[in-house]
Length: 350
Image (cartoon, rainbow, N blue to C red; front, top):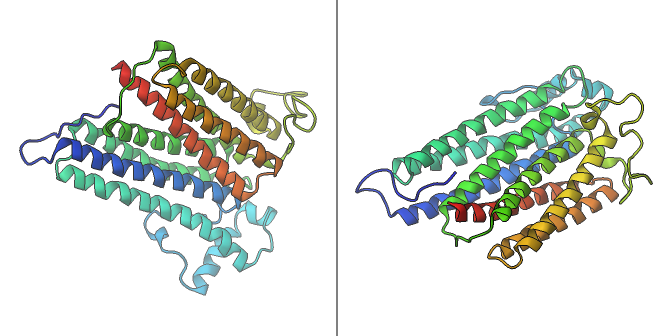
């Protein structure tokens, strides 16, 4: 996703280098907002708030209940879904308000993120600070952002009728698109920001991209852990309740779906993914330590190591909200570090 620094039109265009920096800074801010969106989404999950709003109203839904009658109407709608009758039966209106505000805040942040993208995008385009190719890429990201809102409702709708929670598959899809948007915007920002290009052998280029892809997949495995609340089981380490392969992992009449539908399997898979990433990050560091890629490789190794320590702590503590959100934020930092390394070697390959 390389972005040229040359403006797309003639004499009135501002200095290309300054324009590129401005657009890059905006994209870095957008990455921060997407990260905040992911973390708040994690909080709605950990506080069991995601099903508190049972309707999708992209425009009017921005206005929260303003009167006691409005609150009671929203509460009555919530009482019609299985989560209330089977999990939260008898909860008070004040308790409902707590979970409602989490989900409303998550949706409001999504709306704000859309405006934070669209308004500067329109300004940069109108003032001729974007190349034609970059305009197309940014337009595509805006469309994907809109689809992310629809995907979020598709996820929520899975928990409104026949189950007490959202589908872990839809949750993983929702997170996947959020991380993809984060990664694409970060990559474009790296393209536009002046960086020192480095040379690296082919194995390091391949290794850097493999690590970035591995981090992405590991985050999706983490989404399955969150979807099944598997982080609050098997709260021992390094073994899972005294066993390497925990009880319930491909025991009896197991099927392939069990890899994504049992607590034992999804937590075990996430643990193994972490070990593989640690091995990959260590290899990358050792292979790069005498090259110009050494600083980036050290960053990736340090980020992966810190994230694994944080993950172990989170599991041992049975995933309290604070650690769960810190672990989710750490995953984005690891992904950002891996993309930074991959971008450095990809720049050398051009």
